[in-house]
Every structure is written in structure tokens, then in C-alpha cells.
Length: 98
Image 1 (cartoon, helix red, strand yellow):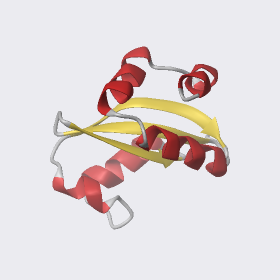
Image 2: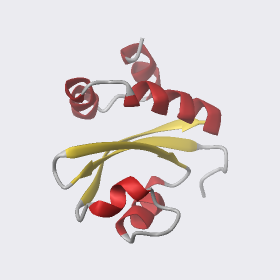
Image 3: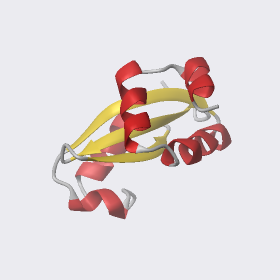
Image 4: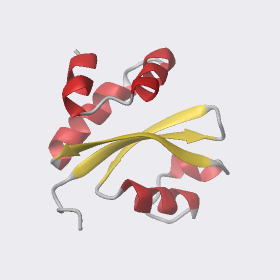
């Protein structure tokens, strides 16, 4: 069972072309919400038919996850693709984002 304070940061690949960044306690459950057009799923992802988690990392607190989310959203596509390719865990991710 996942501790409530254990947030994850994740990147979705939407229709094989767009990357979406989000945070969740349970990324797999959150993916299901996105896929089902659930009211709690992001409006942005509702327009896509194919969604796939291509990167996720356990971060810890919501505040830490939100801080990383903001930094990752500022990366360009090439940098996000590099992050996905390397599959960094938290210590390496923090160094990557400096």
C-alpha cells in the first residue's frame, strides 16, 4: 500500500506526439482517470485517445512533486525526451534539473 505522502511525478505520451506532465499518489490509477475522461482527469488529456506513462519517479511530498513538475514543464521537448530515455531516479533527476 502506498503511503499518502508518497507522490510521484509522471510524464504521459499522448497519441505518440505530445508529452503531458503531472503528479499523483498512484500514477496508474491517475492514468485510468485520464483515459476514461474522468471529471478529476485533466481536461488537456481528454482530447487524446492513446495515453501511456513513459516516465515516473517517486518524489515524496506533494510540495516536492509540484516543485519538480514546474521545473519539468519548463524543459524543451529534447530535454524531456532525454529524461524519458535516461529514466532518472530522484537524486539524478534533481541534478539533471539544475
